[in-house]
Length: 249
Image 1 (cartoon, helix red, strand yellow):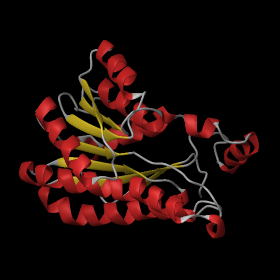
Image 2 (cartoon, rainbow, N blue to C red; image 1 turned 120 degrees about the vertical axis):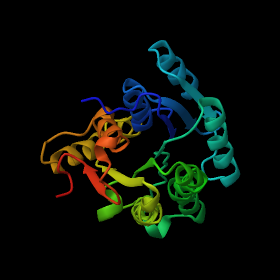
Image 3 (tube, rainbow, N blue to C red; image 1 turned 135 degrees about the vertical axis):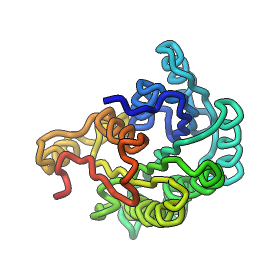
Image 4 (cartoon, rainbow, N blue to C red; image 1 turned 45 degrees about the horizontal axis):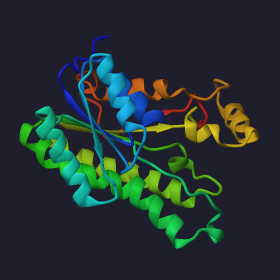
């Protein structure tokens, strides 16, 4: 199915690896031009941009601390200047600092909320005037099923991912009259570099929870995101799509 994304400009945060890189590859395969955003000093952005360019895609690498509103606005401005516009925002940047709540430090809490939730808000606020003026656009945020059900040892992460749902439902109400669709994708556990560092018993438990009996591959999440970024999803907004293989039923 042609998603008609040729020449559309998409900005992806947390693009360097894992789900973010898979989203970049999926959108590039559909012909989108990409602004790849990752943290300052990232060693992943350059190789990803080069790999996409070798495949014929247009991609620029932009470093930004998503928690910094000035850096977020600067990244959006750079994307518009370098790529000629902006139609799509995918807020994927996220970190974990797992501890049970009674051992969680203020820093653990603040860092996760700053990146995962405030970062998404910073970029949404920066792109909203652009999307309103052109009366079209797509925003997709990557949440988690743990933001819907909670998770032992992840009070900060679960709160940030639940906050993304409330943020995006509000943005959907605010921007809908301007032709902008805002949706959330909530994966279960995904086979990324982050998951690879977890103990085997945790990965096995997540697989056992899934109705499909396995974890998602990053590209399986990316394909759903690509659909939401297209006009095929033009009447979907304010929705939370769980891409979890039935891990949370």
